[in-house]
Image (cartoon, rainbow, N blue to C red; front, side, top):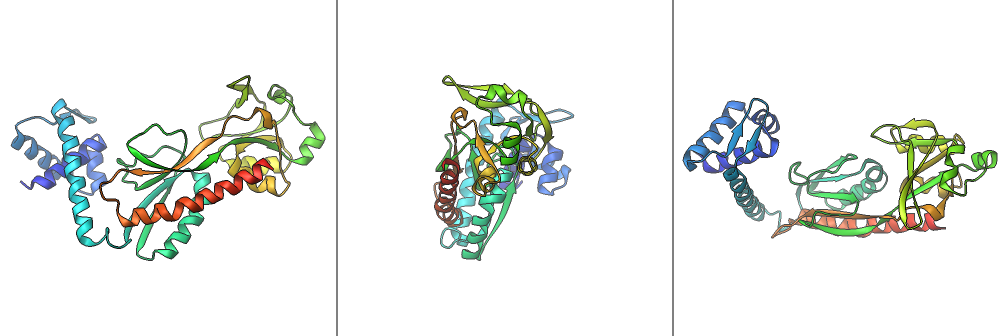
Length: 305
């Protein structure tokens, strides 16, 4: 039995939650993974996984052994990267994730500059509107727009973004400007959400964040669609400041209900703790942080004008 192969197989199966999923992820035949994990359990004399027809779960011994295996495999990876030069010169593969809108508008331009500056680095940009696990999905760094709770990650603060409510000058001239969120039911709203139609928007009043009902003339799943409809005069939209920035700067949108906006949300670039941070990741962080911070500062200047 190859101990490292068996440990790697056990970690992949445990992370994937099943042998079939792990086999697809690794491109390894299912019987091979099953044999390697079985050999590992036999050599240890303990059961690491509880197998069912649909998935596997860790035994108590499996939970503690998984943590030990992950530490050992991470140490081995660090040692291999040190030998092959990833700690001497920035090169290799990187995966970075971010929300779709911010990633397309602001992270991707910075990534293009970064790749031009570091020709030996290849980068995968994972743009998705969900929280991605850096460990489970083998991601090197993530741009998070949220109050961070995971203290196991290193976070580099970049700035803040806020939700803004806005409409076109033509709509406001035709229908009037709301002075309180409670007036939104008398207006046409353009609502967007990836999770389904929205019936309320968040605002801040009397020291608390509260929701107010809206009447959506148009509901869409992407912010760009909502912004286009708002600029065309269909109704009032609520979007992030970085999405509305160009419309506000160009006068195509006017911000309303400013005194009722919720507090801004912090933006951070996060990555896992390493005893030795690979140069490729350190180069990305050092390159991206000041540029993304400046972009957020410029957005804040437009929004606060």
